[in-house]
Image (cartoon, rainbow, N blue to C red; front, top):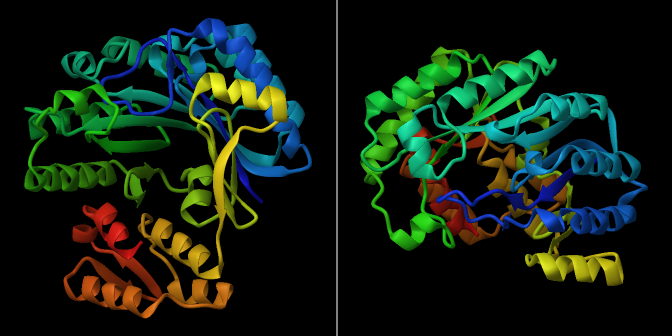
Length: 367
């Protein structure tokens, strides 16, 4: 059963590290966008989804009426299985009681809160719209509204940020007792303000040290790592994200959204005007895609699965797809095992702590 991702591109401002498809200060176009998305979603009315994730952008930037329209079109056209995870992203400054009540009424059962930092100096540095106190009050409002499954995002690895500051922030965040934490090290993404400014990040050895210390601190707080950037209390792992990492199918709605369905990878156009015009004309805004053969599906599931702590049951995947990795790919895997980047453990191939820190490079070499 596929999962569903719904992209809301609108933001009040673009954070300095962001390279996502967003539309800043264009709230007047939200109604037309929702109308287009309602039409695009109709082609999937026959499907049932294991989970729904509404992200952005800032979905909570929508007005109450627009949020009701969004949740209404999802309910009308996209059925989530009973008990399925239904997540909506919120930023602290746009958390409001009326929106939370509406979300509960319309079936949302999980909130992902973009805390990012609990240090006002670093929040300003990142270009965020909230401060530390607003993050605390927003989290409490979410709990008071009855949500029992909450993720909090945390970033670290800023220039001149000390290990002591990082550990203090992790300690403050774990005191929230959220069910899930998504951890992101600051990176320079093309098309972001930080990339244009060419800011100097900590060197790789310092980043490794920071990451390892944060992982240990989170796990001491009983928030256990199950994927490179994700930690959860037992039984609270994100089912939506696990579907991605296990090579499952997914449908993406909205500008720039990606899909993997029936052996085909495809994605929507990334310009807002073009997206709305294409959907109005054709009912779809797919820009390009490709069909994957058995070997390509196997390799995709293998590379994505390496992100999980559990690793990949490679032999089971090969049996399922009735094919094997190519000989040069197998030689690279052997090399990575010999140099302590990968390891075999009880039928699973997984990254070592050393390999986890350079996984993007390992996957690039295996692609």
